[in-house]
Image (cartoon, rainbow, N blue to C red; front, side):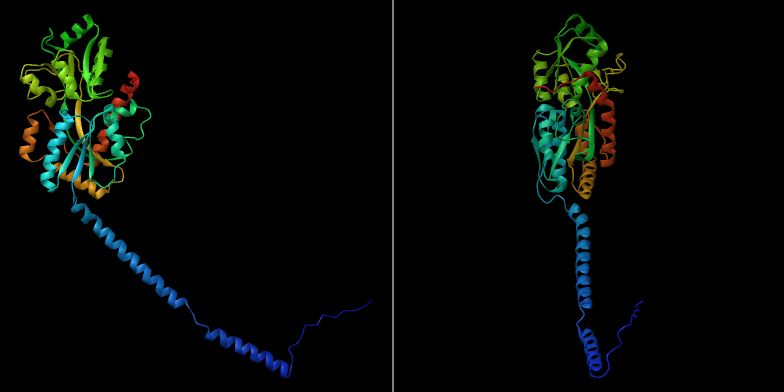
Length: 366
């Protein structure tokens, strides 16, 4: 049987060994002389880190300063109704007060149509920098349940700023009619099918009050929608309509002139301006309670510091005695809420009116 023996090579001796040893030594010295880039790279990283830290610090310090310096140029305030509406009257008064406080023009832009949705769609696309604001009235909430394909969600796509004020609605009739109370209006409508009433659009508070009255009292009422409340009031004055639930600025001048007759205040308390007019609860119709309110919003993405400053400035504006007294004389009840409180208010309005509008089955009007 053959035998095999495994052997490991031994280092060479003599000259070959000395050559191998010298080569190994030269390689080691070469590695030791190779320049190291680590300290230089580390210095570069530290330099850039310092630059980024400084830039971030400057940005964070500049943001509050930018908000405090707001506005640096004119501001636009979109009103989604025509001139003469409660929203327009409040919006213009607030714009004038903010212009004085900011030392910059606040320009009101009336954009009526499609129950405020046309203006809201355009507003959603504006730059979120605080220089374009919008008056958001009750349809800002209710149209979500009327127009199923809106390109915006009023609960998510905007930045709430402040609930400025609200007006209790006043139920008025043409004085030529034999109607002096809510009960007489119901009796008249029951005997006369086709009694008509005005509103500034489907899903607005005046419209919903008419629908509630018709459903609760089993009446056949005709809803007539207008692009603005002022147009509806004109037709009511002309006798082409029978009643309307409007805000005090829209109807009180005509009541005082004897051209319209107030039969109920749709609230839990009487109006100081119409002390002799009963509330809807006193008249026996407690479900007929509603207000029209004015809130201010910004596009989604507007810096929080800017939103907070505008909200605080609005609160200061409505606290000015001359401003406050002038609008309280027109029936306004001021609030001046924070952005968070306005969001909570919107959520409650959605919970209250969403199911109602859905059950009525309101459809968009052409």
